[in-house]
Length: 165
Image (cartoon, rainbow, N blue to C red; front, side, top):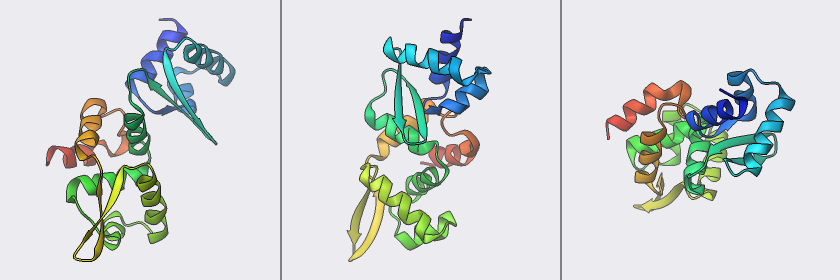
């Protein structure tokens, strides 16, 4: 298998994978991977999302929403928040902090990010602020289609949560 095909296979098996992860999985050096990834992007074979300190790779055919969900599922705290909301439907901020066993500041930071990306939304129930998934079915679909590769270390927990729904 040539290098470009190997890189494409890694990306398709691990949507949302970061540059360094591809280096580890393929054994390619930084410059070689940069050369091939730029060529693959130019040729329209893969999508690359660049942000400060982070470059993520996606196979073609994913919507922006799916890419956003995958990116958040690959990060520990957002994945944990999404998993809790899949399991409990509606949670208050305090309930989320207790169940996630994270600091209020950490939960607040990631919740704000998930709200900004319109993955999580706020509902007021009996004058109390509750959080829920904006598109629960879309999240389930992404988990079903790309599990276990995007879930990585918490695959068993999230798979259990998903299968219980």
